[in-house]
Image (cartoon, rainbow, N blue to C red; front, side, top):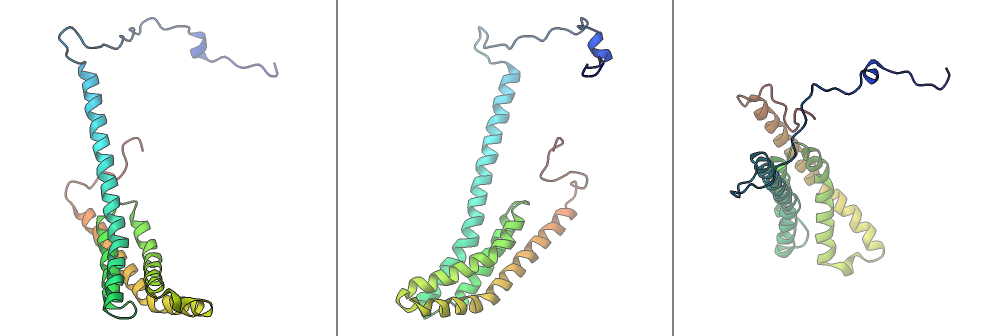
Length: 190
């Protein structure tokens, strides 16, 4: 008996004859009208593609807000005087806030965790590119320390604004009428 497979009751029952046969797929008839079930699938597929394109456009807007506004602020500060200052800080905080407002539910984590990195890289990149000769050799290490120290308050403000906006969105999503029992972001099968 070792190594033998036990038979179950459904294997002994044989083929079921009471189930009707599944009809073959229909193609376009003589009138040129498509099968209604196929037409519904085509429409659902097109709607799905439109939603995916809208998501891509939305994520592009979020990235442009999170990176573009601090970059524009940093460049404007550099053109108006030496070093990044108030315009950079406003651009970074505003960019993080807009990105947190526009991001998807799954993108919230990325907006908050990316804000300090974006702020630091933008501040140091703008500073370095404005005067690359100043940051050669030992000057690069000194400049890097100065960039981190100078960008830290802006990083903290950007993260705080991002968390505040996301918290407000969560509260408003829970208070929205008619959405109490509906899971967000997942289907019934998910």
